[in-house]
Image 1 (cartoon, one colour):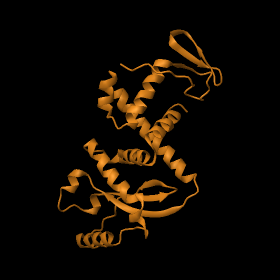
Image 2: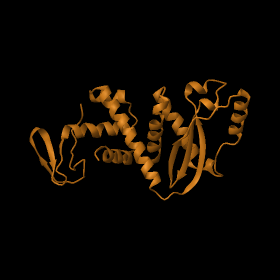
Image 3: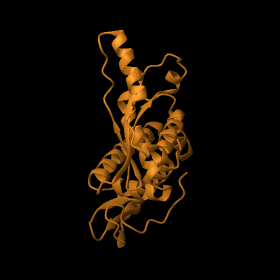
Image 4: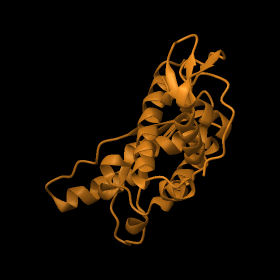
Length: 221
């Protein structure tokens, strides 16, 4: 069961003057949109659970709603977050105090003593305006010769891109945060990795109450 919450503002425009309609619906006097209190309450609780790192499976069980409904909502949240972070970064005055390339390995690949950078997910991180921003880079190109591949890989290991003070900034902390947080998913399809990366970036950059505030705004606008 979802505990009833007092919704005093329109979820679409934040206006405070709401009219009560039939079937527990409300209508905003500013944007004139109608909405179900029950649906908005459910949406707000799911957003809160997402920002509190509660899995879609556990969320669905607690709220007694369909797992697929919650999972689809979580996927949508990640897409909203990715767009939001891209806009925030590119529309801000950049002050890149540090940047660093990072090779992400899954837990399975970490156990492989012969793991190669060619199997890693290549990331580039920036620390700017006291926030982390990440880019998902293309896979490393492989040469026809195995010997050439090995030489190139050794070169990359010794000449990883980093600024002079990258290890004294939150970038190094973020990489550890990313690895720790992605463990709980027990395998992420590589084509969806970008969205989980952006989820971690979002949760690292913003306090929980701010995360909830931003997601509510994104979801209803």
